Length: 120
Image (cartoon, rainbow, N blue to C red; front, side):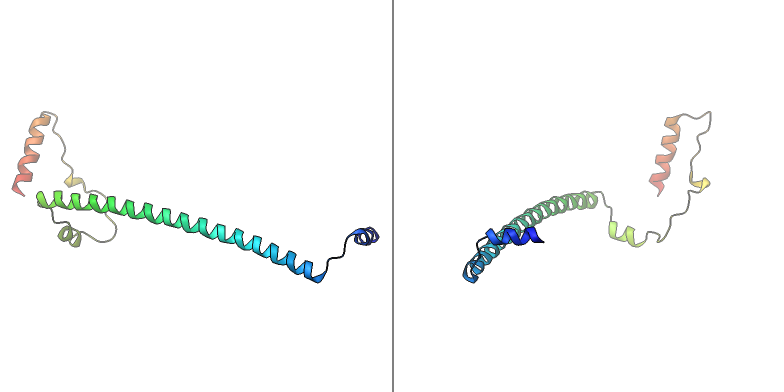
């Protein structure tokens, strides 16, 4: 404590006017720093917004192209999704699996599967 008082003895006393000016200067420096940070954050937000809108444009184009292809091949997703089962999907049933007979060839199996699909 004694050493601190000794340092204060040699230090020039600041007048209230000088203290006010120093305080204003420090406040203006701090304000400029905050304004710079705000500008930087606004710029980052603008870049992020631009990137998101660009990505959404690409996704929209892809969705339009996919819907066009699905329309061309006659797939109506809305009706299929509304009739899709809700909740958990159960495990595969054994009777749905087509087992290959040891004597048959792959071509015969494919032809039978194609014929069954044409009947549907």
